[in-house]
Length: 97
Image (cartoon, rainbow, N blue to C red; front, side, top):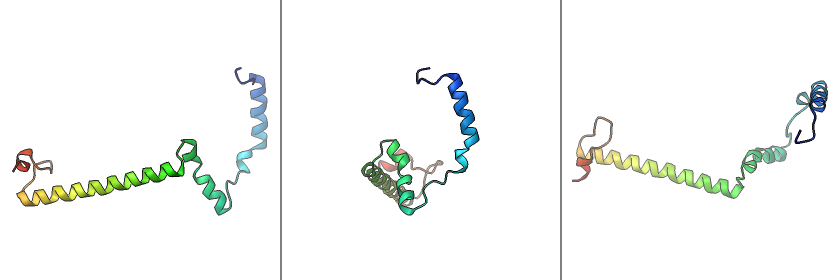
């Protein structure tokens, strides 16, 4: 095997782990500090530093605000023109003025 584990060694190790049952003794982080550290493990594994995460969150917030602004703008145009297309959007001819 590439990692040096023979099938016999793997089988022996698997059997020992089944007798130890370490998953029954695992508690995870117990302190608030430990929980805070563990909560960023997945982000760090993906190469997402706190700075990158903050930037990503800022972009998402900007996009939410932008979508809301566009929604309001479309609603105002619909009201100004007095109608909307069957799909809920204005036909292009209504926007040409």
